[in-house]
Each structure stands twice: as structure tokens, then as C-alpha cells.
Length: 239
Image (cartoon, rainbow, N blue to C red):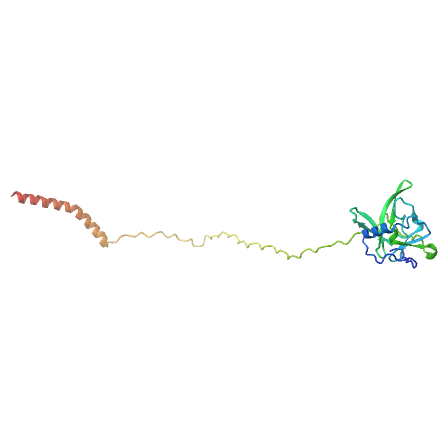
């Protein structure tokens, strides 16, 4: 924060804490009315929670809206900005940088036919401190100002990814080395090719072969013997 926050010692604290949501503060403002809308006394408008001086009456002007309007705060760093979606529309809201109490919205109006940005501050969020009670408090603190206020985004819930074990790459199969062709030296002994041995039959004949032989002879001789026997019987009967 560039400027030093000055705390009022005379303002009455109307809000007990800074935890009110935007919609609840807006509802409270509608019920209580905007008492500072037409208020132009010289002095300072302080945070209703912590008493920090935020706006000077020298920057207050008559705007077309229903909220008290200020062109700029005593120091830009005395405010903190947020993006709010409470009413279904994205709005830029302003809060006290010292205690984060919601103050109002950043709005636009037309001044001298020129669009002008201003701060619409809810009367319930500030208390007025007369100039006579503020001593030599400055109306404005010079500091390096940027064209756009820094918007503080709401915290985001980050889910840590589930830790997984690293997958080991599959081992490549071991490939057998290709067989190398065997080089045969001319001086080495060449393998000999064995030829089958010719078996020469011997003079020995098996009993089965002998029986087959005689069976063929018997088949040839038997009809001849039968014929001679029949012829002999016929001759015997004739004599």
C-alpha cells in the first residue's frame, strides 16, 4: 500500500464485522436508505468497520444513480477490487483494503457528455468525519496510479492430481543373433557319405519258405495221381 491508512477516532462503528456478504449489505442499505446521497459537507468518509479514511468530500459529486458517488478515493491503494456474481451479472466491487469490508461498486456515468467511471458507495458501509475533526489529513495522496485497478480474484480450489506410479517401459525381447555361415577350409576333411550296404542272401532257407514250396508241388501233382488212380479202377472192373 503506497499511502498510510489513517484511522478515524470519531466515527461510530455501524457494522460489527467484515464478513457480511454482498447481497446482505445491499439489503441493509435499501432498508436504511442512502443518507449520504445528498450529503456534501466537508470532511472524510471512513470505513464503518475499521475507521480507515477512504474518500474525501472534495471528490464527491451528484450522480444519476441512487448511491453516493466519488470520482476517486484518497489513494487507490486504500481500496481492494473484486469480481462479484451475486445477482447473476458480473460486477466489479470495491472493498476496504484494510479490513476487506464490502463498500460498493465501480460504475460508469456521463459527465460533460463523457463516460466517467466512479465509485458508488453504500451509505451503510461508511461514516462521515467532519473536516474539523480530521486535523491536517490530506484529501488526496499522490501515488503511481494505473489505468485499471487490480482485480483480486476469489481463491480457487485446486485438486491435486492423484499420484500414480510411473509406468516402466516393457523390456524388449532378447533377439538371438543370426547364425553366421560356417566357412569350410579347403584343407579340412570333407564328410564322407555312407552308402547303404548291399545284403547278399545266404544259402539258408527258412522252414516257412520250404513248406510253401512243397505245397505248390502238391497242388500240381495231386490231380495227376488222382487221374491215374481212376484209370486203374476202371480197368480192374472191366476184367
